[in-house]
Length: 319
Image (cartoon, rainbow, N blue to C red):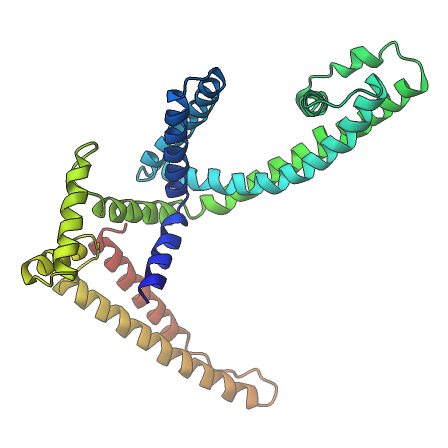
């Protein structure tokens, strides 16, 4: 059970994008630090490349500070959903890039000895044309051979599909994602704010590099409470564990409000059963024109539910 608990905690930890980004960035930093110490020029160049990538990751990591901001927090969720849409879009775009770039490069430059520069040249030839960089026209402008005509036809087909169809498809996907999430921005922000507060409650109070003392303190409490079974340390461990839990304690006003909401729901259920009973009795009548419907009672129930819910939201600070 302990192994499953640890594995479950690890799975929950790495299910968060920022935690995975932290791990990758830290590992890359130590790899670059070790390579930097090796007395070889290749290792020094590799360390510079890794540190450059690592720096980009840390800049991206700073986006998390916008999570509790009401106007910017939901935008991070939108960016994440759009990146998810972009993955499937890039898969389709890659197929069209290869379908156009490989035959066009072969027709323009003929057979060449393979090198790793050729895939980059093919990508430059096909990808940047989506954004209007039509340098290939200079190569086929005066080429009146059959290869030039074939490349010209391929260019027309590729620009029609990539620049018109796929770009508009991407814009439509992004617009759909934005419209879908824009309706729930308030709920998204509240969830982000709650998660952000809960996350920082679990962090040590001391900042790095003094954070090592907080970790030592936590380890000592765990060892003395679980291994040596000392009651004082066990109470400290329970206090520390409960201190990282964020919950709302219901006071007397909140309890009465919840009870009134439950009463309103019970009245709504009883009114619904009564409404169905009238409806069934009306259906049994010949012609079905004399169906009795308790409209006034139903409206009062809905009004009671609305007023009670709004009062609850106002008292709890939700709206």
